[in-house]
Amino acid sequence: MVLVVWLISVSCRNCDTEIDWKAYMQEVEGVVNGTLDYTKLEGDTGPLVYPAGFVYIFLVLYYLTGRGTNIHVAQYVFALLYLLTLLLVFRIYAKCKKVPPYALIFMCCTSYRIHSIYVLRLFNDPVAVVLFYCALNFFISSKWTIGAIFYRYKTFCLPEILIFV
Image 1 (cartoon, rainbow, N blue to C red):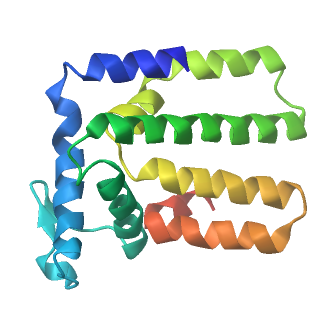
Image 2 (cartoon, helix red, strand yellow; image 1 turned 45 degrees about the vertical axis):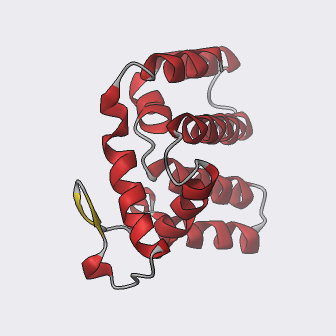
């Protein structure tokens, strides 16, 4: 968690982290203004290409962050998503009993790309990944119905998440 908070504080000085965030907020703002035609929704990086789940999730972030102006609030929300993802992945590894517990510590500290995707770029991938790992955890626990629900909604955010299949 310390590393994640440090990354967020360092990103205060790095304007590159806001490129995608601004585009996402522009796309969501189009929906807020009443535009529901996907062909007319766009941001600085181009047209909106994500499904409606993306819009709904980022609409919540839009309001939580003062209409997208307080990026650091969003970064802390995504930091929580990151920690939830780690917990879900650790539970999967623990259930499989294939990875020694000390290896999990290395996983937390070595993946700068994961930290970047979650707390710097604020992509929609983390939301879909959390939903996928929730589904997988339910499947491992033989809770097939609730697992299927989470599995279904992961594609609601990001269709490419089907690659996990």
